[in-house]
Length: 185
Image (cartoon, rainbow, N blue to C red):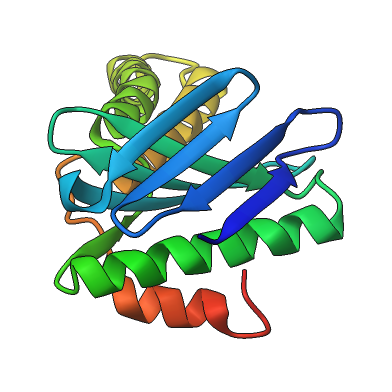
């Protein structure tokens, strides 16, 4: 039974991932979660970046709304990041043996996509509406540019986060090979 232990970030507790013949066990602190490979219905790979760090997460969702999250970020030391990549490669390899037709989705979930979409759609609507209403008024050139620009940029960001767009997918076996390569993520 392969076991991987790594710190997810500097100053955070360790996460332990143990792969059995039929199940995966994830322990973090006093919490231990177990999921059978057969019960996994969806796998997502999420990567988010900010100026301070990049976060990585492999999310395993069961058929009964059970969820396991294996995550790490670039604030963890290099050894822990390597162990995280090894754990992800091992999980994906195990899944490719049990469920070879499973595809890994890339990106945020539906709820997060809706939240981001709404957060940008509202200022887009308000900014573009204000610019359109004020446009014909005398002296409007002082007041149209900034709300119009904010509205246009917000509309573009809302469009990129639209929740109804098709998610990128990659077969679980291909992603396992990518993580098994020496230059993994």
